[in-house]
Length: 417
View 1 (tube, one colour):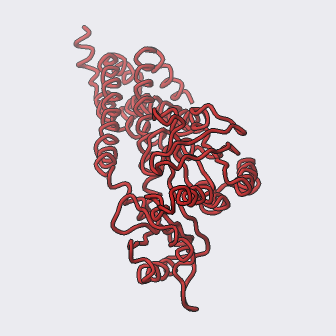
View 2 (cartoon, one colour):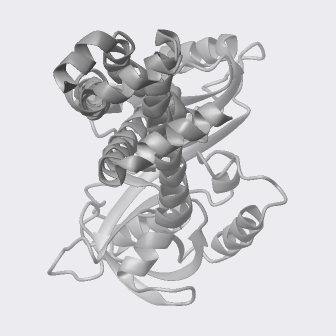
View 3 (cartoon, helix red, strand yellow):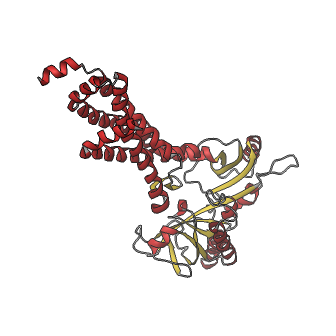
């Protein structure tokens, strides 16, 4: 205990240097925590699952995928036509609808991007929403909003931040002037707010409303179909129990003659996400192999410099400690302890503070990639802070502490004399 008090007192003798070293450590640990949170989430999202697998059906040769909605009914069943065929346990279709509140001026503040789908699928198939605890207030509020959306097909559910940006609240009505479905402008009523931060900038609409509007377009234009009439389904999501079932369902769909024009492909959700992430491959590679290591090296250098300066200033002190009976190993532990105390405490405070501020106050890291507009910091960040702070402190202070324990009493006092 006395040894710990001595370490603390030594650090506090030069408050400015200790505080600056601590601040530098906290900033670098914060950046590492953000980088690892993003990389960890994406790694988990692209890792193949052995059970409860989600599969994505999309157009084979075109990006973005645009399939006729006539495919929906059979794709939901996994193209099962024989008794021995495997059917998915659940399904969901996605149609992307985008527009702005101002027909002439499109800005970030007035655009809306919506997933058009069957409302009930928000509860069972939408990532993040399907995992809400059954007894949670978020789940219950979502169930109420979904029930309203099923009854009122002109409704819309907005993400929290999108609602704030648009300055809209539940009960407000407005017209969305579409930019991907020309002349299909939809008047909607806000029925609720999507509960998770993942969909803060998104919205959800009833697919029947969009399909009905496209049918009405044909009636109003002397039987001429809308240009997008045969391209109203972007993705189909299927849930299967295991890898064997996925392989069977994928084979059924890709072998079916129903999906010839256009042809479709089936892949697991993790593989599909990996495909979307290919556009960010260089950025993610740089974050993983350049940015994160560079920060760790910088952190070790910062601590090494601070401890080295301290050791040079305290040559006489270490000599006196040896005269008083301190062994070289004890002096080495003393110097290492000072670095470890700064590194570990600063690392834990920084990582824990990052977790609280980002998750509880900011609602996630705004770093849009593919379908992921925000990233949360996992609870693992607490031990990341301990490991990064402590590890870099140890590596950065090992040589200075070794130098300190090898101080020769005769040489030090000869210089003093």
